[in-house]
Length: 220
Image (cartoon, rainbow, N blue to C red; front, top):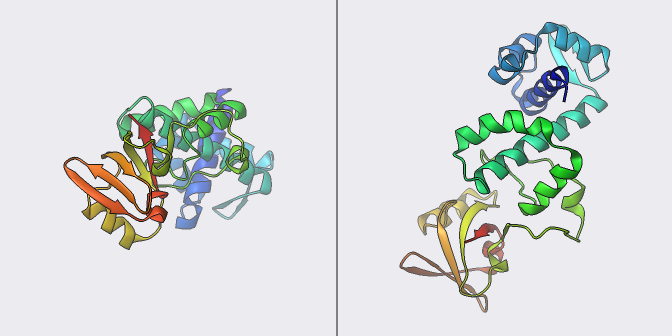
């Protein structure tokens, strides 16, 4: 990818992810470390406006329909790259974040879809931010066996490392956390019916099937 294209993608990513916080002014965009480190400057912003990716009113920057789609794709590549680096290569979150900033720009659409399928179509990145879904997320058929899957997909007696918990309920997350069911924990599946029975360390727990399907793990 050309350096100019990398600059544009970094700017698009920032506008897409930060617009709801009111930080989409030209000056704010150019203050961001990732944008500044990419070499983007006011000429980059002007070129993006001329290319029809953004509109500028006063100092406020807004994405066009084309800019919206390109930024969504860039965000998707970046957050999937973070997932791949943390879950498969087991890099720490900070290292994965820095590496993903470079790695994402080399990912084609085909490779991006394959990574997403391999990871089990994760809904969020390691920081908890939403990963925009792709076409592969809507397809029932999977050409690659995911390495991250719901707890219920483990075989009886199999262990898995909890990668993330897909729940917007803070009450449920707090309850699971009090039982030790948190990302990074090792969990073993003992039983599916009539309730899921799992083991964490020396503790055996029974959990409802709907809760179990919110827990995503990587086989060990």
